[in-house]
Length: 157
Image (tube, rainbow, N blue to C red; front, side, top):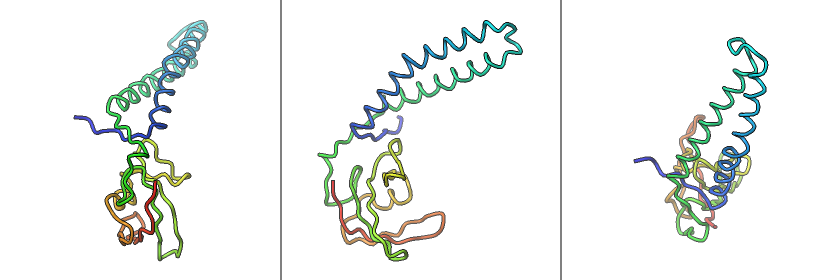
C-alpha cells in the first residue's frame, strides 16, 4: 500500500490546479512545440525536436506523480488540529537555547514543506522530533550538524 500524502485543503487545491494546467495547457503547448520542431526536417539531428520530446516526457512524469499523490491524499483541516500535542498543521513555538532564540514552525506534509515560510515537513528531523510532544517538553533533534535541543513553548492552530 502506498504511503499517504498529507495535504492541507490549500495544498490539495494547488496540486489539482497544477494537474489541470499540465493536462490541458501544458500538453497543448508541448504538442505545438513538437509539431513546429518536426517541420525543421531530419528528426535524427533535430535538437528542437529532442528538447520538446524531453519536455513532454518530464511533463508526463509530473502528471503521473501528481495523480499518484492525489490518489493517496489524506487531507487534514486546521479545524481538526488538537493543541494538546504537536501534530500535522500545528504551529509550534520553540526555544533554542544554543542560539537564544524562538522560532515558530508549522508542521506540514512533505509536499507542502517550505522552509522560507517556516513550514517544515513532518518527515524532517525537527518535524519528526516534535510530533506528539507537548508544551514544556525539551526535545533533542538530530541534525546533520549535531544534536540540538528545542523547548516547546506553545502549540497553536
